[in-house]
Image (cartoon, rainbow, N blue to C red; front, top):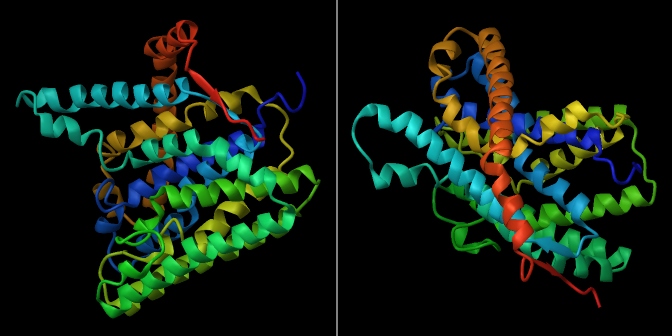
Length: 366
């Protein structure tokens, strides 16, 4: 097996870390794990959560950046992949609906059932959209010279990262609606939960692949130091904005996906893991295959983690509880993913064998 044909275990390890980061974010989130709601204001526990939030906030950006890195040269897209993603979502969430709702004895509720597929699963649909249009992005990228690529990234960062972040900060401090003047849409940058931010992160991944192809190297120690500094700046941003806005809640632009520091954090994480010298490792690569199921499953499992009880026992207990939750949720997700792959997961393969015409499309760069 050639080096290029192997899955890069250092980046696969990064996928695992990013999936764990999503668990951290939703452990803290007000509407899912509710960790921030339970931690006393000004406590060490709250600071620990803010620090972990700042370290994990780039997880989604990382997933998209990695896609840009690996898909930069590919002009072919297989429609089986979106079908498989949607099938996983449908099967797993239907399963959790049956497990969690039917024992309540209230019968079937269309509204409750639909609730298992909305909200937090926005990533699936926006990512599918990016996947389908990405060959055309690749064509544009490949036709640009280095100077044009740099200019494109600078313009996009200014228009879709710096400016939206500044306008949303102004909204927080002014206490009035300012999102109509942003460059993403009338509702502002929507915390970066948009195809606009995904395209930006995808292009950054393309740029990092260009640098890699040119043999550009970065010192691991310097990357680690910059990453710690960047995380500290995001944490400070969150605390300062919370203090100045007078809000009891953590609605801070410091943790928006389009925030320039969050984007920088994703880049630094990627470069740091890229610098690790890890040989092809089957265990890491197999575990990394469960990163998407982790995203689909973890929120359902967090509801059983008794977060309120453990966050009341101090920062040390909270840290240990969070670590245990991450490990158990990942392992459970891996087990569920394995069962899925050997059962329902075989269906996309069967479809692929019989679906030939129109299943794939290739973009001609000429």
